[in-house]
Image 1 (cartoon, rainbow, N blue to C red):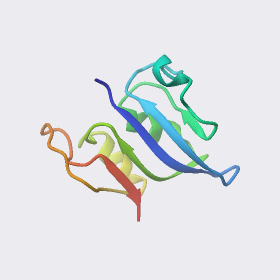
Image 2 (cartoon, rainbow, N blue to C red):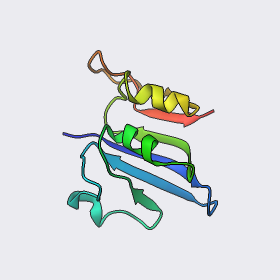
Image 3 (cartoon, rainbow, N blue to C red):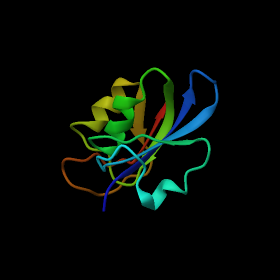
Image 4 (cartoon, rainbow, N blue to C red):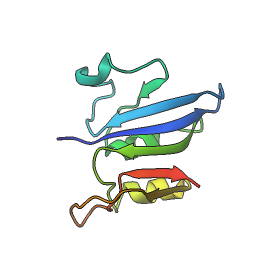
Length: 110
């Protein structure tokens, strides 16, 4: 019942496209359920916070986010401001949800 976020990014050191993956679990390593499923260009980022928040707070300058999506609606108070401050736009299909969430699960750079 947790949230998973995946963000397409450019690795600024190599110039290659990678996919940053996170969950809302606080562990630093990938959960057993996805550990062996990650491809070579998929990087798990673990830590405290919401899945989107964990990626945004730990990507540093190495990764430039291009687009992404989540398994649940993006929250209004924490994740939406982090994504928008990085220049990302929320949009796409809408999903019903609680009042503390946006209607969106997708975001991208214009």
